[in-house]
Length: 325
Ligand code: NCD
Image (cartoon, rainbow, N blue to C red):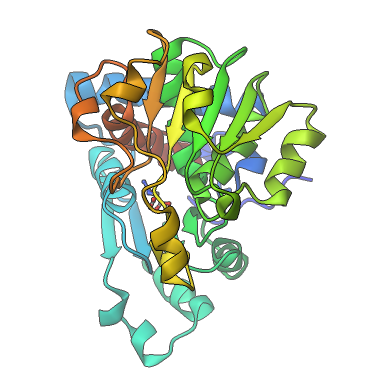
């Protein structure tokens, strides 16, 4: 059953039924191949638009509330840039300590407040399920920009876009994810998104940071093969995509445990010398020590392209949800 269409635009003429209009974007499980192709295609158009013209007036008169309860550089500023480049405006709430949240205001009331001013809400919050909660109370569309250790669907979409851009197609690729697979929401979403394609998964992590069972269950249920490893050297020569993650210090209850695993994997020129010539190394950023700066100029380093692609994909999502794609 399609979720109900939320309040977006009173002009029926603007209602383009692309399957995104008026919808919340909470989880990658909302995406099938047709929807993925659509968003990647619109993302491409947004890239061309920005390169040729810089901006457009597609979302003129629309307002985005950008509500961030957790730190962010790329996700929050790329959503802002996406809205501004499409001619819309943004209410940025990056410092919830200066908002009524500090006075004890609940998430539902904060969302009800913001939707009385804005047409769409982007939310990042430390609790799993928070974006779904916000969407439940909101009559305007809500986009999940990271719900704790749960999901980060817009990151997975920009990751997918970057893979296709770099390697042409996804089918047949060997994808290895490395680092904090337990707490890293980006790898949870990317894994669940990639089951839409015939890929092989390798999950490389210390024992205490293994991929959660619910994500592995999705992989297995979709008929995909996966391997779990601890040593990145054993697999580096064989992979097409090496997706590196930061150990999520803020999610640890025991910092001694964090210290034990924080520098387990470091991608450096020595490791890259064992990798295939045609492969990419990805990272959602921010990095701490996982990728040495000496790798940045390697043509296989795709992490700076990822962050630029984030703006195009978020432009595509905003336009699609607001019925203007
Ligand atoms: C990631 C996040 O917030 O989950 N960053 C991002 O959105 N690009 C990854 C991280 O914080 O390590």
